[in-house]
Length: 383
Image 1 (cartoon, rainbow, N blue to C red):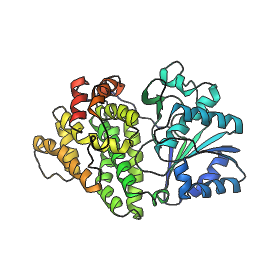
Image 2 (image 1 turned 45 degrees about the horizontal axis):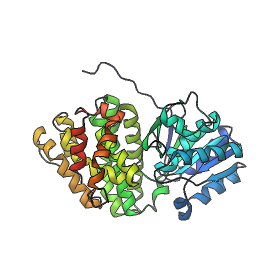
Image 3 (image 1 turned 90 degrees about the vertical axis):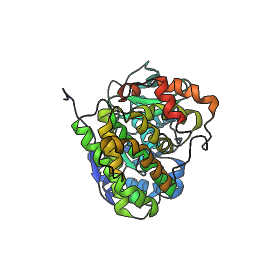
Image 4 (image 1 turned 180 degrees about the vertical axis):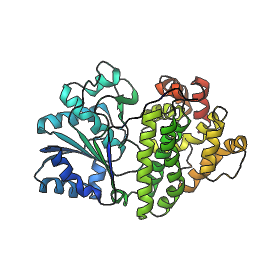
């Protein structure tokens, strides 16, 4: 029996093909006059950024474009964006891109308003006491959940960490879920981001803090991934499938916001920091072992996951035991079957990865108690 829980989200979601056309009017309604447009160089090269900026300028808004965001966004990226925001006098931030620009953008207003470094937020020397300027986001990938979650995940090379920063204003004010922005996404990135979306729904579903609201979000997110990820990997121009995965990503972001994550992400964070590997790929690689390790503690839920992705076994214990293999087969079908050693992860780093994972608060939410043995098992079985 669940004693109590809370559910809240500060974000308004606008969904629909072409809904990005509403952006200028919504910014004007917020009272905005100058936009800091946060994106990255790779997206600029696709041609998606110029039309958005042109529409903002046509509406009479000033625009300063900021593109210095790495694939694993850093404290330095945030600090540089906050400086650009102050210099331009921007009163709203628009993030256009995947999880990296969105995560970086969500912290920039607080850093700009406070006049400190994001490093101080990472170390806990400072906390975000009040929200800065509003952040409006337009995701161009379906997976990170950053468009829905009230956390920003950053790398801090000074501390050697990759972790989340929380606080007022770290959830977007408005998120435009426009699947047309994802039509040109390459097959490999479509697959990786789709597994990222699945990982959030999955760990939120299995976590100790799961509740009826988060379960509903997680289950629907997983159903959408099961129904549409392979379809969109096979045909990236399938707008219906793109739309379904766009919604799945947001649902996963909301679910993890409500009930947290677990060992998969605790282990993925230090690997991402050490090797600069795509987070979605890491989620895919670690997910089968995560299911295998957690199955004894949450058998009926792991069984539900297995059935959602095609397992026909009616008995919970049998289905749960098959869940890891079911996801391994999915990885193989969508091109995400590469093992961690193939991606460059070295035996020499295993103990450091385990040690860094053990420092993660995420382990407190894992259904099997967090321990070096658990982290090592998930890691080694994914090599």
